[in-house]
Image (tube, rainbow, N blue to C red):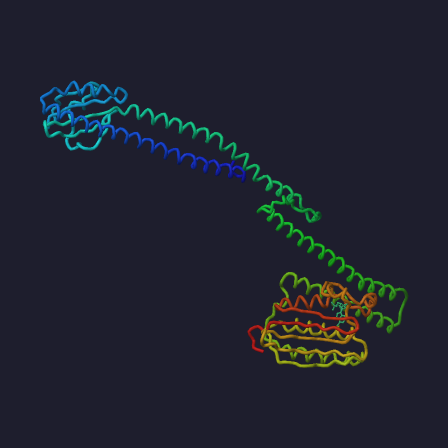
Length: 460
Ligand code: ADP
């Protein structure tokens, strides 16, 4: 029953209102009781003082006091005042009119003199008198005060009852208004579906907590939608890239099977197939690597690694290719840098950058690789720059996107084009090492790629 937010809000609202109403009413009732009691006590004190004075004066003149005392008692019909005179030993000597006919009026308990006491429906005060030696007891009925208090209590209970009846209803309506936007959010959220990620939660425009929650969820949906769109494009590109070598393999096989061939022709055909299969394997390996990066499982190996040595080895390895193309591959400043890193992954980054630099630099151009240790920032910087064809400003923002190729003429050349995955893989590896990769380029002027890696706890 109290499973809904609306019901719980109603319950809390009712409880709070009841407490807020009950506390002052109970306090007021107690205040009224005390006022009534102190009014009675004040009356008793005044009457006692008056009676004591009159009794003293009249008895000193030898006059009868009973008539005056009776008149005094009868003067307060509403309060029903009564007066009694006792001997100092407690024997009842005289009682006025209005004295109740109850047993306790025949005596008094010793030790209760001075302060008002309650007996049955009466509040009484007893005080001794020295001359004549008497004990005077006067009392008033508490009935009227009790009735006033009962009337007030009744009014309190009526108000409490009305509040108890009205508050849950009003609370339920208010809670309904307050939770209405939440219900709307729930309805819209329930309609969201991966296939319809264009839908967004509504905003009331009040910028309240619910609006901010909706904005946060909408932001999350934007990111999910972007991610799914990237994923969709990636899958489509991957399927396309895989289909191309597969189609080449199939057509190579079909050509081979068209007629009987000599051993040399079969050998040549098989070499073509092997080349295509190598391309296919390379592409699958790159896709696997990116998937590992997405899952946060890239570069699990961490060991002290000399970055400068990796760069030197790669430069030696690429020197033949550079020379064949007429490109001057030059190793610049190489600081001795030891990183805690995955050496195979770092080798892949360096190879990829050198391969790109040579690939996109025409004969006569120059490629420079260097490693610098930056003690101030605690980082080391690997830099590969060339004076090749460069990249246009329009292509630069997309250059790290998967399957993006800036060189469109080469992209159409199935043999010479790259996969468009090299820089994405470099970025994934560098980020797995908590580093950054930046590419600066201008068409015709060349390209410089800078990789910054934290030097970890191994000193430069
Ligand atoms: P690819 O395998 O196609 O080289 P990359 O991800 O390594 O894939 O590079 C993406 C694109 O960036 C390339 O297609 C190329 O157009 C451009 N590119 C990368 N490096 C350079 C460079 N040094 N000079 C000019 N263009 C470059």
